[in-house]
Image (cartoon, rainbow, N blue to C red; front, side):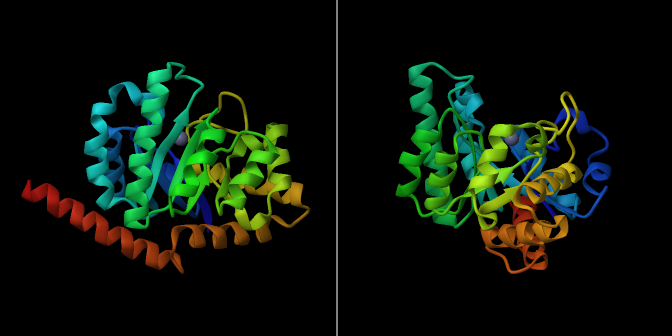
Length: 265
Ligand SMILES: [Zn+2]
């Protein structure tokens, strides 16, 4: 089974063909929401697509509409992963907004710890602050589409974190260095669909996660199927389940609760 730990299948790019895109191959897909509306969409997709699982969060790029944050936090009861959350200092340069990003992230980390949910973190320019923040929380975490030095990659792994690798790896020498520096036991795969494709301008899809696996295999000097099996093991450990059946059962329960709560509103 392939593992796409972070994608945005609720994007416009996939309108009307979400099922086809997810069911094109055998892949577990975590759809990461970015605000309140996409959190609702994510839960709706998860309720009807077997291999799609809900990751709920509030993207740091949207810090200016942070009044939505409490509503997203309220939905975490129905999530299997917290994402997309994190720090973005690439698009957000305003000092006050940067501080606000940290405050919001702390809220999500607190809730993740309380609910024992794994967290998939966005970091653009925020690696140093994340390395300062994370030791205060007892959470399983992964850095989504990690970009940065091998030093930072190793530092995240030293904290018990995972490095999540998208297909763009095939054309990114800096990411290749990080993959080389990190033990396979701490790598996960993702697509960040529709972004981060192996080719420029391509609409990325969950099944392309195989391209990340092939490139990891090349870097590590291993067989593709062995890397695929190891990543699958890592993903189960990260998610805290012993098999995919258990994950599906957890999802069924959460979605049932969600639909029940919505009905009684
Ligand atoms: Zn993303």
